[in-house]
Image 1 (cartoon, rainbow, N blue to C red):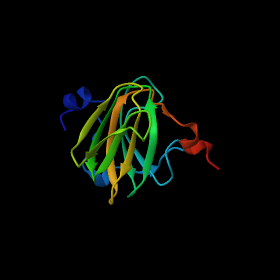
Image 2: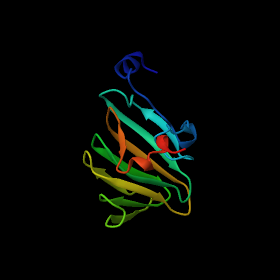
Image 3: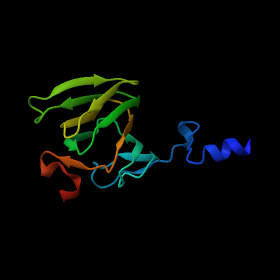
Image 4: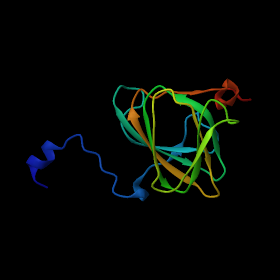
Length: 143
């Protein structure tokens, strides 16, 4: 590789294919069974980040908000995406592979995977926080 090119791209990060993505159990704020892959950035800092979320079939992330604008892209699978302050009157959009949604800061939404696993790519500018509308839905408070 050309040395000048290498020096000009020191902050570059490349993940060449899906097989190179490193999955791990998601933090306790996510429902059980969900996995996460940190692709770029530190979610605790004020900087851009990109991560992937793997939801098992039929898994559900209840209504919650984020303290930042969030961009979601469906990489594979399909899910129902809900927006609103209650599931009773939520607006539902089915999102297939390739689907995209931008959520403004503090917009309540929920996600329900279909019959197959779903992989979402999530990006924004941290720090990343997630607050469930109903505190009882927060997996950290369930016993």
